[in-house]
Image 1 (cartoon, helix red, strand yellow):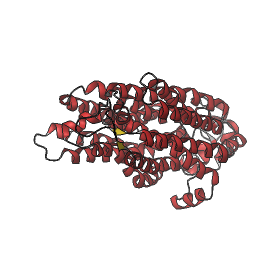
Image 2 (tube, one colour):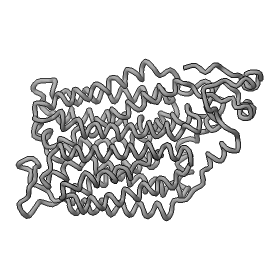
Image 3 (cartoon, helix red, strand yellow):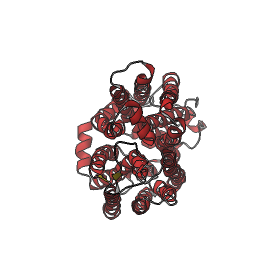
Image 4 (tube, rainbow, N blue to C red):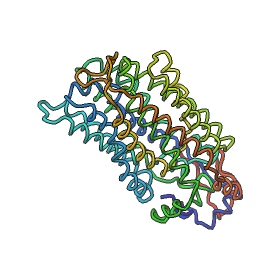
Length: 460
């Protein structure tokens, strides 16, 4: 739990002396922690979207409907809404280490359970195992998704905080990128499905092994910055009441959460939208991969930029506006094969702000559920013959109205964010007033000479 300065060995009274002498510490093992969380987040995302790029083949193999296949992605959003509230309490109560280990265990267990229909002969209802495994992975997601920001605050000095948060956060879309590329490659025919399910177990198992063996503590022995040393956590209900009175936070949660909800819906439904226009699963996977790849590249550049300039508000506004423009372009150009990959590139880059807040994430899940249900409900059967490559017997669907609605909502969220989101950077100002954090893993001699702030060797 990120509590008062007393959570670390130093007494709270030593905070001001340590600030004046630069006695904060950044430990090398913070990068190991970041590696574990990044791998876990990447694995969890691949499990979420592994079925979507090959939805038609999965449906045929397990004799499932398109609605059931959509639920294998939608369950992540549904389960994470109530469990996300619990995950916030778990992170603040048991600490980052145990929350990460629990998330890794749930993620690994879910990856194994969803593979059982291919392991056991004569499974009566494979959908139960698929949905049950996905549900466990969804529980793991709620513990994983909040971890990068908390890790960056507790373990990294402020000049590395945005970069660390960006690395941990963008590991999730990297997992989506892997799923878009790997699933169509691994699944050429129905007999390849066991190979795909088994392949996705490997990173989940590795993440669980590393979380169990390599994470030793939730907070470092010495805080990396004055912000980490003095950070406090309100009770959950008190925090909700405070946020409910914060206009800027509500605007950010609704608008940015809605933008990410659109991203989730788009990622899960892309193959079904494109197959109506005659595109293959491989092409849909390529578009999804470009969508994520350019987003990751944009996030890396943006993370480095905001680390230096601290222009967080400007970055998120520009990013969401670019996403809206690309979303409109996709709604207009979806039937044109030559332009779809090009449109997906700026769409991915536009959505790469990497800004993650708990409330905006919970709003994303709720809005994502509503969007996916609404978008699929608005589809209609084609009245004319089409070039659909969707599975036989289900009939091609017309996605024109749902895609236009998705673009309109994205534009609306962008306008509301630009017009109504304005807020000062209070934490940065407080840290600037209090003093700098440590810049390297070093032990200042002046701090070691005083008993007010004992200086421990920076250990890996």
